[in-house]
Length: 289
Ligand SMILES: NC(=O)c1ccc[n+]([C@@H]2O[C@H](COP(=O)([O-])OP(=O)(O)OC[C@H]3O[C@@H](n4cnc5c(N)ncnc54)[C@H](OP(=O)(O)O)[C@@H]3O)[C@@H](O)[C@H]2O)c1
Image 1: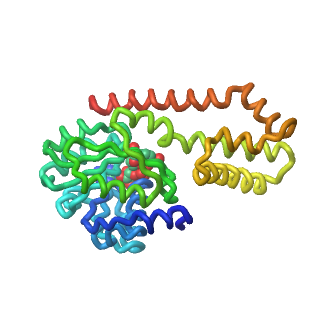
Image 2 (image 1 turned 120 degrees about the vertical axis):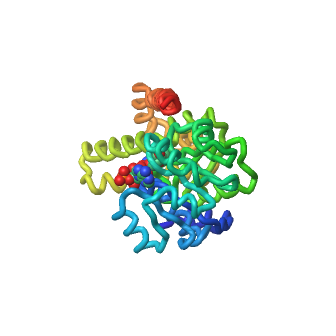
Image 3 (image 1 turned 135 degrees about the horizontal axis):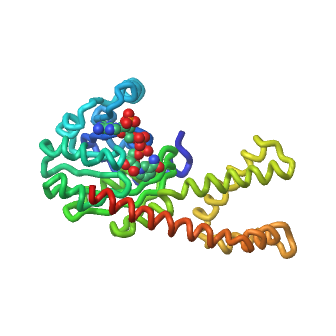
């Protein structure tokens, strides 16, 4: 189901691609991107080639969305103009070996594989095609993703617009130099995990103070959703919004003091920094493999 925000995005930024797209790996992320493309009308379902090793998954996608399907990455790429590389990072080298013979100069490859560098993709492909490395997040599955794009050396303006259109269909898009993708991984790539912990803890806080769990759950979810929406829509700094709900001597300022004394903000800053460093380590390991 599309939110109001994503419906608005679809109407204002719709940029028809109308090219044949091979989606290599139709797991969580590959499927969410594919559905984003179809629902936004970027390219008709008949021009999408879903590819996975899992035939059952493919059968379901064909039945529900009328896309084409194949279990051969080589056949999918041979038939496509755009390649969406959505397999797990460890599977990427084998997939690249398999598709290399059918890669053409005009192909655009968009990779979402975490930690797999542009130089690695370019070297394994062995041709100067346009390659775009991205770091999306799991909220793409509800069209509220946050994606950073990094462009390889041979990417054209038209190819940039294609990638922007695809990821705008499932959320917010920014462009960063590749060396900043580890920080993106530490912030928005891994960020949903931090926010789930916050939601879980707020629920438990409500339950501790006597609320029924289902009531506490609904309130906690809506509080996080609504607060994020207010920051986004007002354009105000979060500190200003926080001050606006902090009555002198009231409940919020007492809770904030508690959070500050346990270093909430420091903890989150450290979490992003630690995840960024780990992303860099993993990326290095993948590049050597
Ligand atoms: N999930 C996230 O939050 C997130 C965020 C940012 C980036 N990413 C990146 O997104 C990529 C996909 O992640 P995911 O969570 O969507 O993983 P996933 O659900 O496991 O999807 C990968 C799919 O590829 C299939 N596959 C395996 N080998 C294949 C092959 N040789 N040819 C075609 N398909 C093959 C898998 O089938 P089987 O399951 O049968 O092996 C699975 O359906 C990863 O590279 C990850 O780094 C994920």
